[in-house]
Image (cartoon, rainbow, N blue to C red; front, side, top):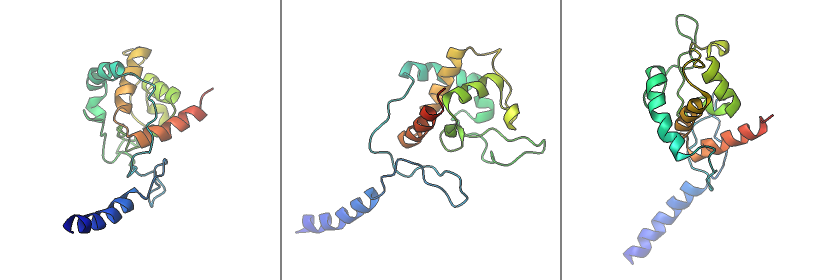
Length: 161
């Protein structure tokens, strides 16, 4: 009898938690994409390999962590311009806007820097080759949830030349 009662109480809770199955990130009240609260039903294959992620970690720590933080969490005030009129380093872990950009643009931002987009990130074209940039981006995207990655993948597919 106790088992039936426990099941009767748990099933509605389970169903309530599973009622939302959207693949797209939710919009927050301010119109910005919010971090998804539930993973997608099916995982999307990623463009990178586990080996790239492993190579990307030390490269990120060496070239990016000073500004974007070792865990890619970035500046908490990344949307607010600083005293110099520049945008601080955003999080790259899937909680900011990096996932809005297709892969060619992400590569270009690392290669040419973020200054043209209102930030202060220097260009890395003289420090990193294209393989190293991809390794860093692989490590960064490995922090993105399946839901964020699936949404990014749709954007990336639409923006291909």
